[in-house]
Length: 90
Image 1 (tube, rainbow, N blue to C red):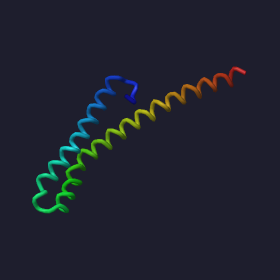
Image 2 (image 1 turned 120 degrees about the vertical axis):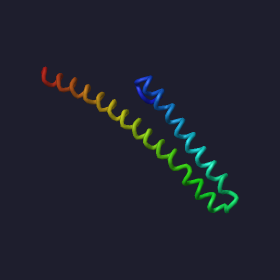
Image 3 (image 1 turned 135 degrees about the vertical axis):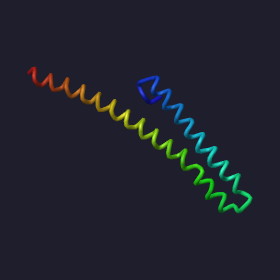
């Protein structure tokens, strides 16, 4: 749980699990459905089958990183305002 909001963290982590499962299922099913043709073609199909799930994982990780960055910037802004108030009070 990398996000502060518990409900948002639950949803994002659930979707992240679904994305990994999609990548795994897509890759394995593509590999097994084309294995009888040739191993090289099956390996290529494995990679192509995993792409939609991996793209979803990357999008969700980008979302998580963006939210973490926003939270960190809010902390820094709060600290900078406190520092500015201290300097102004002198």
